[in-house]
Every structure is written in structure tokens, then in C-alpha cells.
Image (cartoon, rainbow, N blue to C red; front, side, top):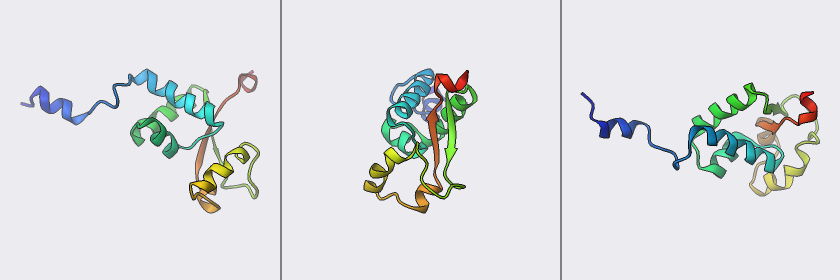
Length: 112
């Protein structure tokens, strides 16, 4: 029989943030940055990678955000231009940017 103390150890709480609040926090980060990638969200919010990916899929399924990629394009898309300076300052350049998966908030006008 497993004691209650051991059960708690299997799933440590992440900064006492409720599950519903995590999705809203992730949405806020994406809105502030214009577009964001999962590793950046993990670092900003100090939430595990698994939780971030699960919440991103939840937000995408509910049409709050959209997943974007630059793999098939030859030039930097307009939506990514404002972030290039920041990415280069962090040492993220060229093919590293091209392979990343990005998320952006869906505008209300796009939903209609």
C-alpha cells in the first residue's frame, strides 16, 4: 500500500498554479510576444515542458492559438520579423529558427 506522502511525491505541484490558469498564462505570454515557442514559454513561466505542450494543444484545439512553422518558406515571414533581434541576441539563428514550431494568438477578425 502506498502512503499519501509517496503519492504526493509523484506529481509535485508547479508553483501552486491551478490547471485552468496555466492555459491563460501561456496565452498571455504568446499575446505579449506576438509569437512564441514552447521552450520560451517553459522558461518564462517555470512550467514543465509536458504541461506547456499539453496546454498548447488545448489552446490550439479551442482555436485560441495557431501553430506556425518556417520550414517551407525561403524568407523570414512578417509575423516573425519583430522577434529576430531578440532571437539573434540569444544565439538562435538560421536553421535553428527555421526548425522551430511557433504559436500565435488567433485574432477575433480571423475567427469570423
